[in-house]
Image 1 (cartoon, rainbow, N blue to C red):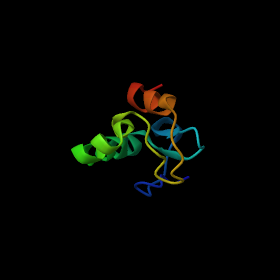
Image 2: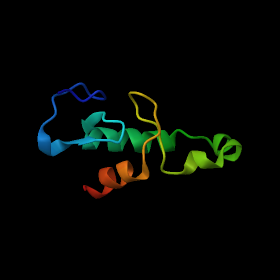
Image 3: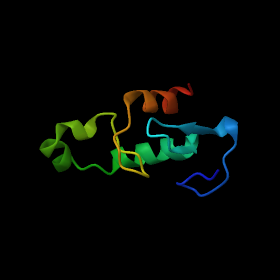
Image 4: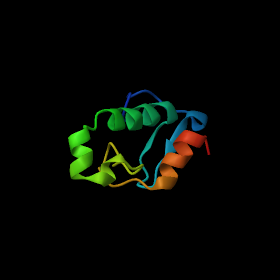
Length: 77
C-alpha cells in the first residue's frame, strides 16, 4: 500500500489508518496536520473559531477526522 501524501510504500509499523479508513505514514500525516495549522490565517480563525481546533479533514476524502485520530498520530498509539 502507498502513502497518498508521499507516494512511498508503507510498512505495518510506520503507518496509521484514520477513522475514514485512509492510511498514511505517521510522519507524513503529522507533518500535513502541522502545516495545515501553520497556514491558517488570523482572519480565518476570527471568521471560524473552530479552525484552530484539532479537527482537520482527511487529505484524501475531506471528511472530518476524529480527535482520536490526532491523538494516535501525536502520541504514537
